[in-house]
Length: 254
Image 1 (spheres, rainbow, N blue to C red):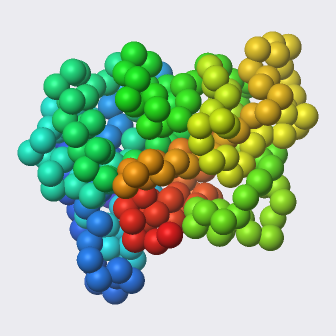
Image 2: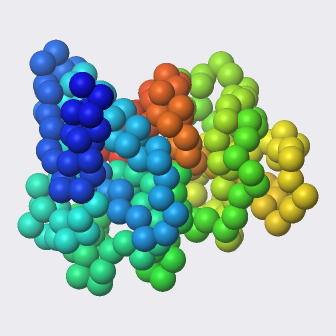
Image 3: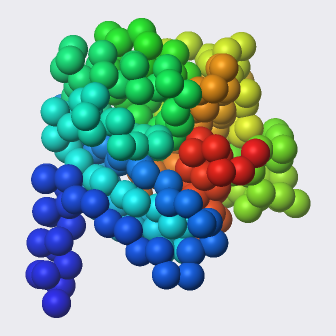
């Protein structure tokens, strides 16, 4: 049984497979989502867990998910069938110029984007993408348990954390080449005082945003640092956090 599950996940990752389970769905209209996870740099083993989490959520959420690492599917033809995209830990120069042009046209039609964790470690030479994701990865201290400070609960993706001033969990805490605060709506930041076991302070930002959103015209974008570990995609609060971010970017909720 385990081998069959692994083969299914492998097929989803490599070829791009659509799945939709709509029985008992809470939303009448399906949300068509392209999940992109191609890596040309560091590869997170948690990608498979992130995809499984999305698949598990698809029944209740009425999501139609197409998962791919084939950058040629970032085309006018494929994207015309999508409502939004989720970048699940892609890295490096994963998309060629033709794909970039198609993606820009897609987003400018008022679509949605959710970037998960390493989405900030991707496409450094593509200004449109940098503006969309909000910031580029610089470095990080060793992955460890640390505390996230919540700043704002008005966004739907923050509802799981309502009533909590902070949340302590294990992840990989990115710092960024430039502080995005002036250009995005920050929802949470890192409590840098909770980081230990590091002699290198180059990761410190002093003001250290981790979760944010933007809305320019009809384009909605959301970024969350969670997602380095398999366990992140098994955490009920983070699952709800990402689920609501996706439904917000897909313009189902405000």
